[in-house]
Length: 630
Image (cartoon, rainbow, N blue to C red):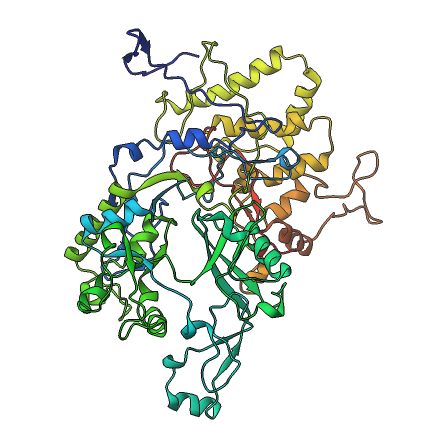
């Protein structure tokens, strides 16, 4: 076919002095069921996020219901805007091409451990994430750039205040021992009146469901060979397994949990803390205070406590040391401070990676008098939103980095991503001069939509004239005449229309059950017969029933027909010579319940699709169990 409306040639000079000409053809990749793209198209997706290199991030406000799927916070102010808005500039040029597992491709799906492995999270989401790392550089530069005091806490230790048996009820331990069997409400956080009222003067003990402990990597590896705190082998094995199996991706520290209903420490180790353990990978870890190296926004606390004896000698490096054992700075005071104030301004942990939109929220971009979250309001004037925007843009441009969402949120440090392909998604041959013009709903080479649709007719005609599998093609044509879809439901997608026809080509010599199943799961048929989005009657008012369109046509058009037949195909009549119906209306109502819970798969890359859509027109629909009636 002839190409129309192409731009003038574009030339580029290469480093060796030679020239190259830009080729406008789309070089899509093979992504078949048998050979899916090994990383789900992640490397291509990441390369397309070019704005990340330009450091051109902006916070923008959009009206409710018009967001483009980037991360956003669901707090609404009185002007009706989403706050703090969308982080513009992290958009990608293409989508991940990974197909969701389905009954057609699942036998050939496999786990990919590639660093660029990619899977779409949602049709209205970007596949990439803009994040900041809470490392030395970010913490040390943050105050210089934003005048906010963001610090990782040091100086937090185990001592008698948080590890020993204290209070009027001897034998009740506090929560910071890794093997503690009970949690105790710290005694200075509850008044004597409260204790007397609730317990009659006894210290209130709360049976724990779990105990969390923090561990940091030990620089001196020999401490695991010659530990200062000796623990039983069973306790060491317990924590070694927890540390090894942890999904915590922080390279510097790990938080692990001992559950009350799971394996327990040896009874002799219940009162111990600060032990060293070597995990299954040979890494030596040391148990530390559970808030050590937690990162807090200390701006407002330090402003309100200018004479608090806090050690600021390391503040320029992003660390702040708690002045333990100085007046009014015991570890009990720290627990009170953390519980009553700092929990509201905790940003993360040292070396954590935090998504920028979450980071902005955790930083509490609010008025000075509400930044500690004391009143819980999120009401902003235009000036306040402008200030918040500038700070968010500064964070994004100075500290932001781009990665794939599937890698950012993957489970564990070595978890894989399931990658799958789609039938017939072969790579184009760039040496062939004939072209196939795509239409993404916004940009197309043809101004005449009718001529654009002629492409599918051309493909079908050439295949049926010249391919050697003529019997298969004739069977496919016959099946297509039964299970046909009107052109209006293909949404100008030539590739989607041909993918629907491939159902019949691939199953021409198979079972009618397989043909009908794939047809039912196709988005084109789901839209044409209006059962896509059909919700189960049990999830609605019981006076409502699912749409009956497919429930009726599945019998009338696609299987039994209206009337019973004899074995020779002639109508079967009763004693009075009347035709006998195959089904009644109550059969239609019951059958319609089968066709509930269907919705489109997520839109993806490497295929022709409508640009402004969030749904795939290529892949089988998904069945959502909560909306399915049977």
